[in-house]
Length: 261
Image (cartoon, rainbow, N blue to C red; front, side, top):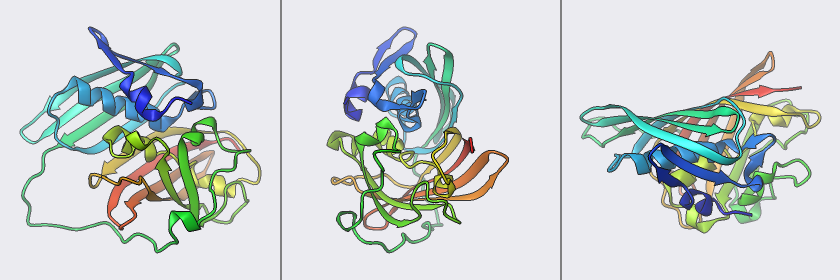
C-alpha cells in the first residue's frame, strides 16, 4: 500500500498546476476515496498560495471518477483583509472529478466564545471492537484504524442511522497535518449504511466541512459521529462531527450521499 503521506509528498508542480498519482489501494469503487480527493485539493491550495491563514471551511463536490494520474489546479478566488477563498479541482482522465471551494481565515479578537456540544462518553479505542468488516469495507479502509465505540453496525438492517467510531491514520506522518485531517474526516461510510439489509453501492455527492480547531494528536485517535437525519428518494443527508480524545471538537460537517438500494 502507498501511505497517505507518500501520495501527498508526490504532488508535483508545473506551469499548468499540479499532478499526483493515486494508487489502486486508495480506490473506492470506480473512483478515488473522497477524503483523499479532498485532501489533494487542500494540499495543492497550501502549495499554490503562500502564507495562508488557517482553513475555516471547505465545500467539496464529487462530480466524477478519477484514479491513477490526476491533475490538480488551485487558484485564489478572492483575497480580503482576513479571508482568502481558494478554488481547487481534481481532474482525471474522464474530466472534472472533484471541485472544492476553500475558505481560509485569520484569527480575530472577539467578545464571543462558544464550543460545540460535548463529546459522547465512550470506552477508549483499545477497548472497542474493530469497525471495518474486511468482507464489506472498501480497499482504502486498510489505511485507517477504526474501532466501534457505539451506534449501529454496518449493514445490520438497523432502525436508525447512527455511527460512533474511533478512527485514525495508520500512517503516523499523516496524523498532524491539515490534509491528513481532511482525509480522516471522510473515513466512515454513510450513516445510512447501518440500515442497509444487504450491501449496496453508495456515492458521495457533496461534503461541507467546518474546521473548528487545529488537531495536533500524536497518537492520531479521533472520535467520529455520523448520523443520517433524512433518507428519501435514493439520497441521504447526514450530520458528522469529529473530536479529539480529550473532547475538543475539531470538525463539523454535512454530507449528501446517493444510495442505490
